[in-house]
Image 1 (cartoon, rainbow, N blue to C red):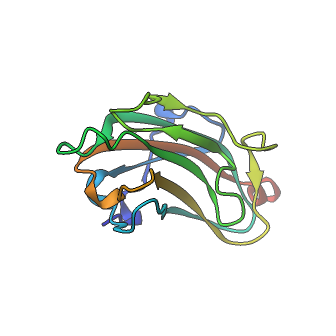
Image 2: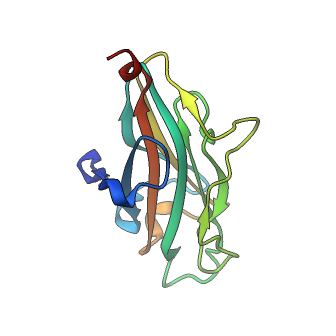
Length: 157
């Protein structure tokens, strides 16, 4: 089961985006949705009013798969928030038996990959499954998500 305590701040030398950078991961054990063809939303981190997400990317360390079912060939990932589920990363294939995308930064829709929050929200990873298959059957896989976050109200101090 995913826990937000996995979110780690990166050292200054590791920063890839403006502001402070954070990294977290989700693995197959975190995907617990048992209903076929049903997405699972995992709240990966919190954002506060006045914070700006400055960018996001992911690295697929180990493609997801159901080791006992090669026909399970599609599960996708997007990264956004409670208002726009693909604000920072659009749907990307994570499955070993599909054409997995090992890393991505592409925001969905009309987003430019940065957003200032006027109220508290969560940064969410949305994992989707294919028809007739359940995410809980995936037993292999690990994705790392990195995002930049800065407090725009700090400019006044």
